[in-house]
Image 1 (spheres, rainbow, N blue to C red):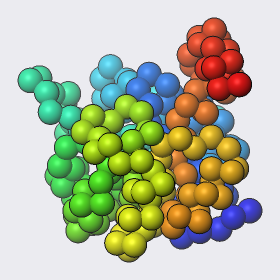
Image 2: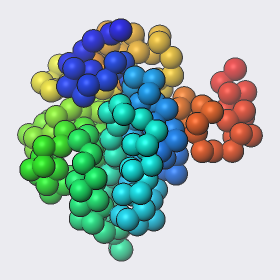
Image 3: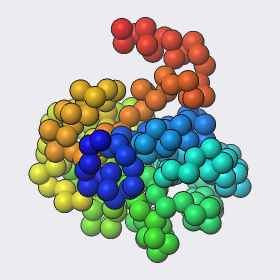
Length: 223
C-alpha cells in the first residue's frame, strides 16, 4: 500500500479517488470503489431531489462499510438546484467527506465544516486552489486541462499545473485529468500530488451504470 497524507486523512487504503461524475456516481459504483480501498463519491445532483439523495446514500451504506463521500457541484444557473436542501440531506445522512466543485463554495464549505465534514475542492488553477485553501477546505483536487466535465478550464495541462500547485498548496492535493493506471499514479506522486482522481477509467467498470457498448467503445478507442 502507498500511504500519503491523503490516505491518512480520509481513511482509505489507496490514494485513488473516483470523482463525482454526473449520472455515473451512483451507489453501485461508489460502494465497489470503497470496498476496493479507494474513495468513491455519489454525485448529489444525479439524484432528482434531496430525498432521493438520502435514499441513495442509504443504499450505498447497505453495500459497503468503508468510507465514501458525496460530490456537490455548484454552478451558476437561472434556476439553481436547492443546494441548501442537498447540503442538509448530506449532513443528516452522516456523510463525513464531501467533494465540492464549481463557483465560490465558501457557504457550502462553512456549513459542512460546522458539522465536522472533510471537504475536498476541485480547482483548475493554482490561484483557485490557494483561495480554497484559505476558505478552510481539507484537501484540493487540482484539475488539469485533460480533466473532463469542468467549465472554466484555464487550458493548463497537468504536467505543468500539478507541480506548480504542489509548490504552493500546503494541504493534501490529488491530481485529476488523464490518469488511468499505476503509471499515472506514480507520475502524479512524483509531481507532488498525494493521490489521483479518476473518472473515465471507472466508467469502464462492471459496476458503472452506463451502456456496455459505450464501455466497449472507450476501451477500443484507447487500445
